[in-house]
Image (tube, rainbow, N blue to C red; front, side, top):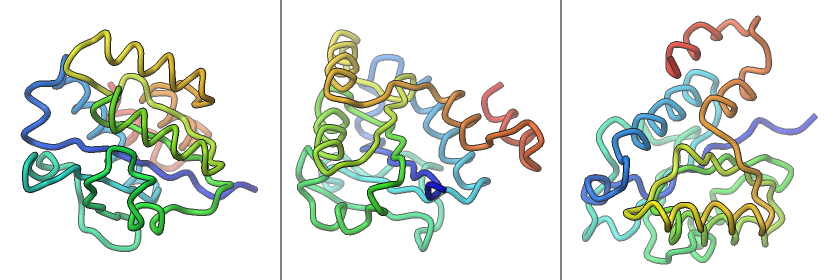
Length: 177
């Protein structure tokens, strides 16, 4: 049996989000993913790109850092070039679900880095954003060509639940309605 999945949220930072195309929707989906992961005891790795310049993560994104939540400050666009990020990664048989910003820079480069490290990556297409929609579209197409599996917020959460008989099904359903 495969280990539980891990949610990786890339650079959902306060100073960046107002500039993201449909940023409110991207943020809403990322928050739903984080809340669902918390409720289902799924580990979360959150990155912040140069937080001194871009500010910290948006309010409500990061819970209490500890065993299930890891916050990684980075200065590389590909998070896999950051030793702290690589050290936080689970075993390679874990499926990594990736969301965040910007799709065509830090998200794409990190996804490609994770694929090169041998991970299975599900890229949550409706929970990634860029300033320009064409940049997001190109990034999603390229990530898929490189081997990332496209998915959506709702699909990811239902995959984590596995069944409508899960005791937290109704709570998780409320996050995506």
